[in-house]
Length: 407
Image 1 (cartoon, one colour):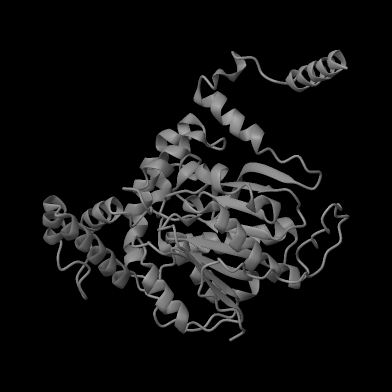
Image 2 (cartoon, helix red, strand yellow):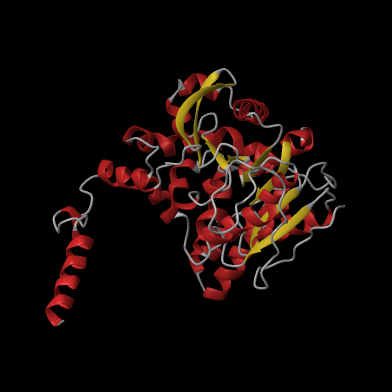
């Protein structure tokens, strides 16, 4: 009996080790190319109805790059508008987005003058066209393209930071295109947001006795004063210390970790990485003045649903300013979700709760409209049936406040 037991154990061990890499194979990637190939293979879409595309499309008269990923083309489409201006989200989507792709067909788009799109065109020619109005027109054209490409009457639009300026503008102009608009790091009254960010940084600097920070912040006071111009070098000082005290990424001294994550992006070539920060600088130079003039304080009604994802510690774009504005907003459906362990980079800081929030609050809107496959019961596969399902209830620990009644 003992020999039989030993033989069984040996057989199991041999079977389990048959596909195990050798010690040499486990040594790890020896180059960026090998590392990104591992990431690409790990998240590869293998489902029959899936979509995995990285391509240039013609938008606004120039080539613009998109990544399109999802396990089922029947799922609702979600277009993400990155922040910055010019701070692309495609190169870190390998980290935060894979779960989204089970419930949505996700489009990451490198906007005019940013990321891969910067390299796809003559930068000197494109620079002259980089205005807020042109970027807004590009966004509208991108949505039209997505709706036609996937046969959707409506899509979800998620705007982050600078992207929230574009996103809210589109939601006001074309609510009929959207299942819902999702704002994250939502720009509302930008100058008031800037003032609160400066106050946060100064309060933290004084509490820490940081004389260098106090001196630099005092040098730009009164910051974002009414009627005064706000120049990029002045904003840079505010952002330097705001980020140092965790107002950009909670518990960190800035966004270095996210920036370093670009290097693992399968979508980005070495040449793309080499120019991504040059593109970012161009976008800031051309578009940031428009951001500083943005003020949606008088917008009190949207004709489409809106979700607001708010990082509790966000002072880069003030979460408190956004929440106060959202409280006054009337929309057919609205939800405010607080991310208690996040500042401005919610999708990277709390990716699990981000996925949960999209599934709980966004997808049921599409299901109710018949634009999402009906989830199969546990243990059964779906055979293409579609239709609304009962929205999920919030777990007791899910932070609020949450406003869901039609208004």
